[in-house]
Length: 283
Image 1 (cartoon, rainbow, N blue to C red):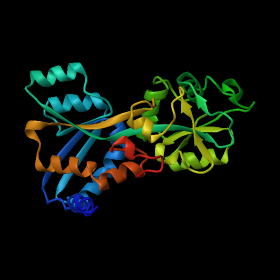
Image 2: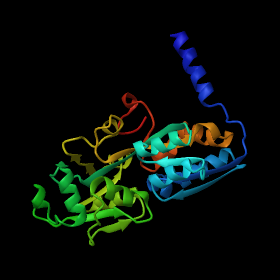
Image 3: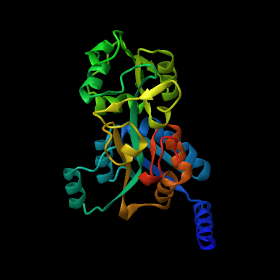
Image 4: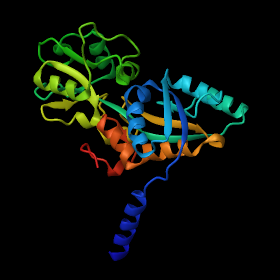
């Protein structure tokens, strides 16, 4: 027992060791999912620890990040997908070895009011509800009532991310009401028994709402980490191994640290951690 306590204390001390100050500039390009909300917040928190590092970010999609990294136009490619075979071939042709730094996952729960008898939907039903093809709950086994659709605003990475994951990139229903945060969507769903919306996993367990199973898969942090839940993506920061600066390495370490992972949690993302440590409530 004493031996295990000593090991745990050593791990705690090492984990809390302050990062040495570094200087420099970091340019990050790529994923909208990373760049719209998560990236800027991480940068703000990172610079509280490393004020002498400047960070620029551009979000035009994962593909744009890989193209910029391979061309030497950025230090990091933020991506919500694995590098493609074509991109791997281009990297090899340029003589580049890329580091793949997993920082967490993007997982979106579809939520309804707790009094809604519907407990699950197929992917097709979710798509048709959010695009407006299905307009009444009775069409998916619920009561005879119109469906109120609540979504994020267009400046959110989730606005596009959910379209890609759940809607086959089709446009949202014109009746959909927009909100500026996940908590605002959850609160609106709590107050409206006919509502449906989406939110980060951590927000879906709030009182008054419930997450729906999708294609029979439980909407939960564990199923995201196990790769089973359909509305999720692993988030990565790719770097050129040969040209990584101290500032770049410090940023990656920060994002993967408890402080950085706390930012992911606060914004509704799934933190980078072994699956068996997870519960729906967090640590």
